[in-house]
Length: 350
Image 1 (cartoon, rainbow, N blue to C red):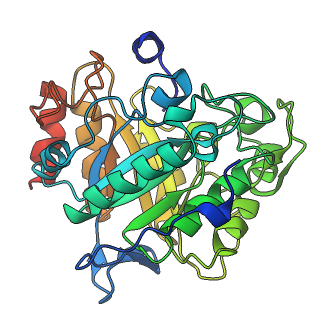
Image 2: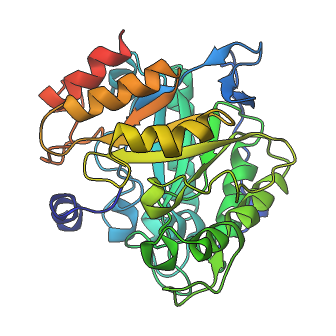
């Protein structure tokens, strides 16, 4: 999600080696998820729809130097999510915190950050929840990742994904969302933007070398990890116009498209969903990784969930946090829904 004014106010107020990485075992009794045609399926080939929430915090608290999560990350807080009949949680991550580089406070970076994320994923899996790990904040060079970049960086992002993939390979209840919301070529829907998206390198509107999505797919697969990979489109993951034409090659064909739509996004009409998203959904699984409405209503999110339900699609609401914003799903981390959140809780239970 782009950092909106109210979320920014709330959030701002408040080279580890791969060899040192412990591999997180797959929890017993949790069936895996993989791609078959245009569906996510379990190990028996049965279609799986993931519907759940985004649990924000681990992308910003560490970089700002005051924690790893924003709010509780214990078993009770995880059970509160599961009580909504959700079956997936998306966890945004910070590149510099995971890698422990560029001056992030050691208490919230490197081994400490990685251990906290690994433990949280294990809690979520034990509660029966699939986990999507999302690279949300990144930064090239010597900077700390304090916000969204237009593209992943070649300096650190391939190494980030090599480490994450090494940690979670063998656990196919974890999916990898390569980059939150790309907006290359000055946030344009152009051939140059899509070339940059796939191939990286020198791109218009950026002062750093971008890592393309193909490079990141290769980084993940080079570790031997077979986890599902999610790849968002351009213009903050709202546009899928050329997703199929520029789709990266995966030797395992285990890739899904990620899509982010809000009432204020590009492609916020059914006509656009039909023309841009539907063709992608006919070829690969379409996961609506972020869905929201910022006017305290529910008409928009209901209409988009209806559209996704008609296609047996997957979707995740933004956001399971208590920020005091119109996009808060909850009034408390015990799972008490806001009126906005109640819309999703009701839908997940249907």
